[in-house]
Amino acid sequence: MGEDSIILPIDRVICEEDDRTRFRVERAGKFVKFGKRKINGNWPIGKPRTIQQLVRAFIGNRRFVIFIGCALLLGGCYLGFGGQGKSVRMQGDFFGEVQLREDEIETIRRSIVEGLGMQRIPDPSKANVSQTEYERAHVEYLRRLQMSRAPGDRRRRRLHTFHATEEMDVSRARRDVSSSEINLYFPLDLPEDEEVDHATLRLVLEPGTVSDELEVSVYRIEDESRHWVSSARFTEVTGARWIELDVTELVVLWHEGAIDNLGMDVGVKGSPGAALASPYLNVLSTTGQSRRRRSATDHLMSLHKGRRTDRPCDTNKCCRHEMTVIFKDLRGFDFIIQPKTFDAGYCKGRCPPRFNPAHHHALLQSLIWKENKRKVPRPCCAPSKLSELEILYFDESDSTKLKVASWKNMKVLECACS
Picture 1: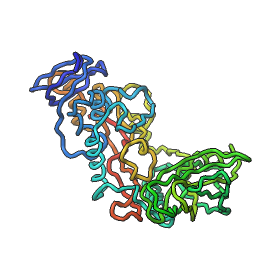
Picture 2: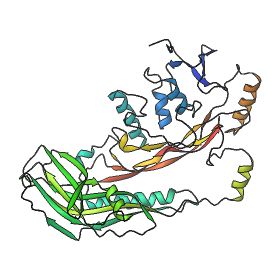
Picture 3: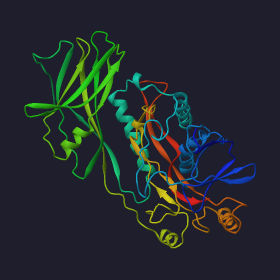
Picture 4: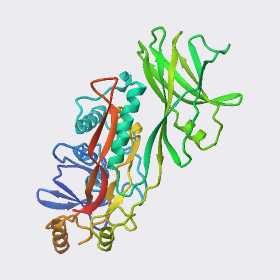
């Protein structure tokens, strides 16, 4: 383990007030200071329901170093995520820095699934969602987003669906006999003030003869040449099914006028007689700017350092920071269709006496701590207000349907010392 690693049962971890890389550990009713050492230990808690609690649930695993636990569990007493205002990318093995075993990832995934009220984890590889169901579910998802948006937020998200005006088989002498291609042209027409968030090409894949694996690829056309855009592989395709491919980068280039819209080639390889039909281009866009109209109450709150921490952080004291979650980088979360990414937020910063108390008890605790640092721990920066996250995902009991649900307590809105 090395001299910087100590394994011992831990009752409580408290951040040191003067050095964000140091910790105080309460063991058997006594405080022990460990400088900048890494500490592993057990932390029994109840059933986890949020990302922060999920990390707490695994803090007892010896492969977690203490700075991960303190950063998320205690709201960022240790600034392990970098400077102020930086966005944190949660990567494939949960947090990049931490490598989890497959059974640990499965446990986390199932805990989150329970939070969504699902019976089991959907299998996206078996999904066969029609264009009609796709549009219905997205309209419902966008409606709920609109209802839950913050006051003063003028942004609107819209779904645009385009039909191909040209669809023809592409015959080339050099083409492999086990492949087929079609050429598609979509008359893209988006308002100039809208930004493309995500674009998906959806179409029906007809496998022809039975094949273990089919590969579908998209190419953008430029004059006499073409360039690869994206590909996807599909296994055990025994009948016609709806598939989709990500063409966001191509649609952004068209919308911004970087290249001319000359259409796209879509090809399938792996089975003689395989065909593609019923193409649709679905584009999710955002329009408008986020502007917050300050009320008289907001003004009074800003005069007193209270619980509101949605303003930009300009000190090293407790406040909210961005933490961008990208679902496609989280292994095992491919059953979530929307959102592709969101700002979960996290809390970090110092909690000096009387600063931004979450409640009267926190204020009292900070004053007692100031007088006797061994009697009680100092308050720590933690979420004081959270909100739900609207999720669009595959139905676990019907492969042809999509569902919309609210994921409780998934976004940190405000932070306070508690």
